[in-house]
Image 1 (spheres, rainbow, N blue to C red):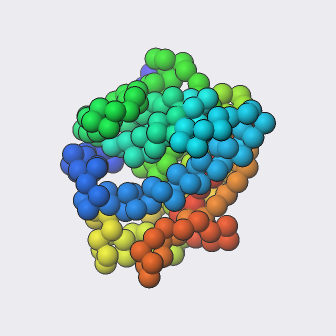
Image 2: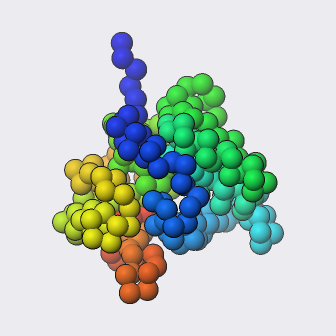
Length: 249
């Protein structure tokens, strides 16, 4: 019997060709470097709000030091390193071996302890059986096969009182125009062929996947790029292109 998988090798190959440049702030992943402060602010606030009654660390530099976190689809480690810097005991997963090599080398030179694995989330779960306080799956579900299975696995990696944080692109006409045509072909913000519009997921669809696994979402927040300010900002009213969704079991 063929084992179920979320792996899409074509997607891995597409990213792998640029993986050595993950930490080049002017390279193919430049938009993620620009995005990272905004998404880490959102992630930090959601985690602290979720664990408000857990008496987390009051240290400003390491507010997450009492928590464990896993970053699924970690790439070169932008989010994984940010979580580790905030004190979380962090694991990073990616099916791209080149990305993991880059992530390990950068963490070493940065003096950070991140446990990186070149593996899918389902294989990590099968081999290690660990669960985490925080599970992050950011800008990854639109690149996998079997997204329902991917969500199911992410929730199995989550502790009973933990929080799952996802981000992806909405399947709208606006996301096709801005997320693909403008971003890939006009402004060259990301490499051409990075996204397929048919793989984008509506918030209602993602919420349904969570419900089917016995979970429910606790927050949905939009994310948009402001060209005039050359910055990403959060928007509670506009989910038409990118959005975050938090969930609990």
